Length: 228
Image (cartoon, rainbow, N blue to C red):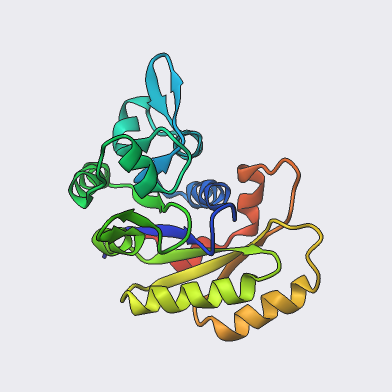
């Protein structure tokens, strides 16, 4: 059995990185060694002349990952914060699965539980004939879905669940992330999703102006991931 999960979201800006970091903290608190990965990241900054991405850096910090693994944690780093295939095209690059698979294999060799964060939603173009569904399939990991709790989340969540199932991937669970403090009927929306999604609700993260992933970890139940 592959030891890890692929974290995807109902859309961009639903808190995948925050949830992934909280998930890492929850797993570590349960005694599990964790290795993070952000296979494709768009919107690089530079630190001491080396490219870095804030999401990848946050994942590494949460896991306590050594800096020398940065290139494998984020194997595809793009300068502009755009859809990956567009950002890559502007750099004269093409995104391919092979380098990502190679980096993943090296990280997997450390023997830790992998928390791999996708990019955007579940079906984001990476190249002309490649998207993030292909990426999730290539890594062969069960999926954790982050549902950004806001108006429209029911449709987005249920469509994403259908896409995950159609891709032949296992949905390990879903997490309700409070991203809109003014959302009406939150309880009813969560209940509607629980009725319609067969996979377990792993936790509900409350809205916070300055969220702390370590603090939010206590709202997550990682037992459903069957970590050895």
